[in-house]
Amino acid sequence: MPEGPAAAAGAQPVVVGDPAQLRAITHTWRCQGARIGLVPTMGAIHEGHLSLVAAARGQCQKVIVSTFVNPLQFGPGEDFTRYPRRPDQDRELLRRAGVDAIYAPSQDSLYPPSFATKVTVDMEGLSRFEGAARPGHFQGVATVVAKLFGAVGPCLAFFGEKDAQQVALVRRLAADLDQGVEVHECPTVREADGLAMSSRNEYLGEEARRSAVGLSGWLRLAQQLFRGGERRATAYRKLAEATVARDPGVTLEYADVVDPSDFSAIDTVDQGSRLLIAARVGGVRLIDTALLGSASLD
Image (cartoon, rainbow, N blue to C red; front, side, top):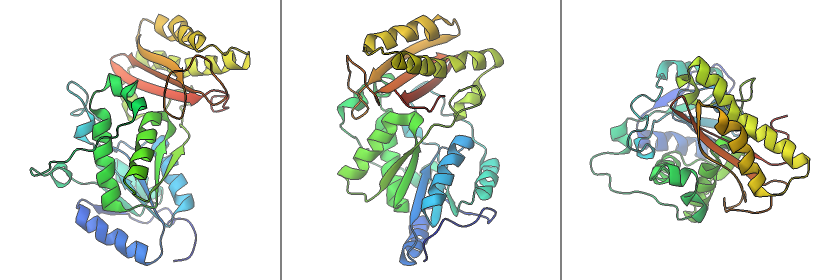
């Protein structure tokens, strides 16, 4: 198959629910010389997801998007049952985006009664922040990603920067298990007011929506602080407490600046140190991130 992007937008993607059927399809594509790109999602497709599809189409001849809402990465009391599900709308958006296949397995297809394997990535940085806030979450992510890689056999996989710890986990999983998958981290896509796009944003009421902008607001203020010469990590934590946490509609879970390679604590920040923030806004849990010194929020 000649070099070039995936099929032009408009063709109807094939919808696959069975992993064996998907493996047969992708085997044929590989035999034809196609480079296969995977965009894992949990459906409720938005512009952030579509930016990943566009990145995949630019580098691959065939693009698959998974839309499985993975129960293993939701903890007790989280929003698994009410997580947005709109398969018809997703399929239309993905058709317009030029996706070749949509992988939409049932829960029983991925996790039959005999299912007995859980995948764990033993990486110290994963025990902090999202790992501490959501016990078991990363094991659920690692398990479903391993299954997606096994069913698709992609050459490249595309993830959003907003889930920075998740990207680190997937990179380690792909390397340690010799998956042969090149993991690409794509920039966070934001609303006009700076709020990072997320399927959970639709839970936000009008007042909470205004408060939610405070997360990206802290990232922007932190960039200004850095450009002004501040290098003490404590100053960035205090900035979050003095700005985001003052909003009565926001419950701050964490706001920190870390080593981007392993999410370890640092005392002195530098160009490329990673800002991380998580908060509950109107009862909705949101996260955001950026690298210090980047122009992503300008």
